[in-house]
Image (cartoon, rainbow, N blue to C red; front, side, top):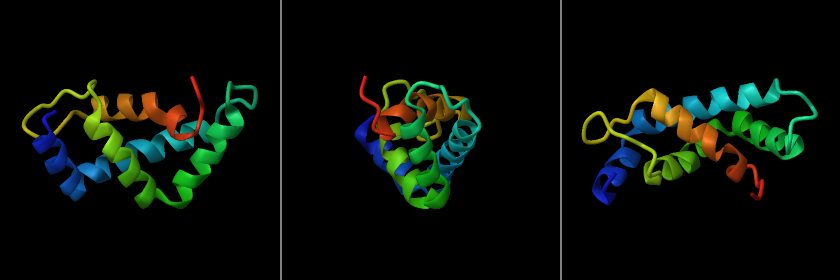
Length: 100
């Protein structure tokens, strides 16, 4: 996305809300993962943060989603739900503080 489209995406509460919902879904899935999952403690801590601060967490993640090169757009500012979900899931560990 161009910077203009990224800014437009971030200024649209509905688009940020879509990211928030994908992030909440990811957090719920992390809460259900096995305790022996790699980086589980960091992932759980971030999942708790998301579930207790969904609006703030969604706004933070939306900035990363808007800048992701993996996002394809259906029109000027609306990536698919699948692209948003994939990008959120791909960035979850980074936001949880997991180093590569």
